[in-house]
Length: 79
Image (cartoon, rainbow, N blue to C red; front, side, top):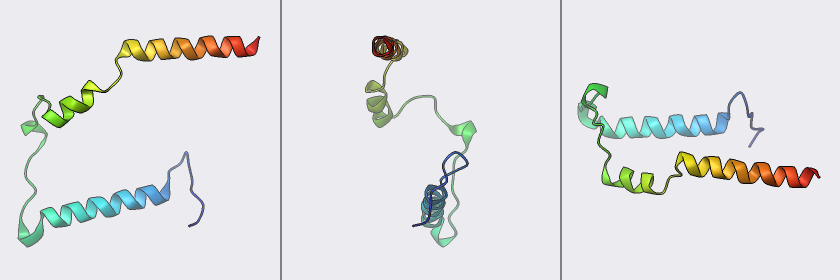
């Protein structure tokens, strides 16, 4: 399916995203309905699925630990 351009963009992925977004908006606005909501109404509280996902995310300390492990491995490899 043609070549992918990385760095300046992945045209296939952008096209897929645009198509899916268009489908979502079309479905939500069927029959003249309006999309409701705005940033002023957004909540700072996480939903249960967001809380679940966050519980699996790395903390900053884990990232630093991982970076140190990789750095140490790289140093050993260079010897």
